[in-house]
Image 1: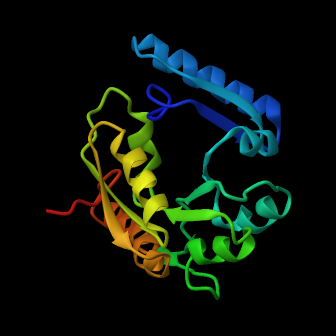
Image 2: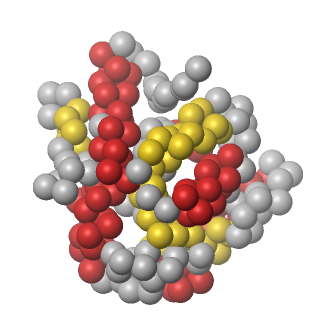
Image 3: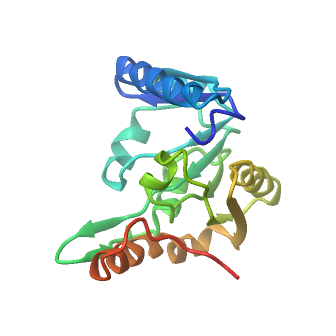
Length: 199
C-alpha cells in the first residue's frame, strides 16, 4: 500500500485468487484516500515473471519450500525482509547455519540474482496505518553497489522513510536480529510497533 501510489506493484500468492483479492483491497484503500494506485494480483510465479524487483515478504519457515517451487530470478533484484526468529517466553533470533535469512536465500537463488536485505525492522502495522506520517529508518545490506543504490532509492521513495547503507550481505544478521529485540522491547515496555532511527 505504501509503494503502489508511486510504483507498479504486483502482489503474488500461492493462490492467484487471494492475490487478486489483496490487490483489489489495496486499490480500494489507496484510492479512497485520493491517491493514485497501481496494483495487480497474480500467482507467485507470474508475479516474478512480471517484476523487476521482488520483495520476499514471507515468513522464514516458508522460504525454502517457496523458493523451491519458483524460477526466473536470474538478473532480477530480490529484497529479503525475512527475519528468522521464534516466539517462546520471549522472541529469539534463530538464524540458519548460513548465519542469516539473507545468506540462506542467496544460497537458494541462482548466482545471477541481485540480492539485498531491507525492510527487516519495520512493523507491519506501520505500513498499514496509511493516515500516519512515517518516521522510520531502514538499513539495507547488499554486495553489489548498483543493486544497493536501486534498493536505497526504492526505500526512499516511501514518504517519511530513510534508507541507510548497512554494509555487505554478510552483516545482514546484525539487522535481522534487531526485529526480535524490537518485539521484546515492545512487549516488556507495553509499547507498539517499535522501530529504529539513526541520528
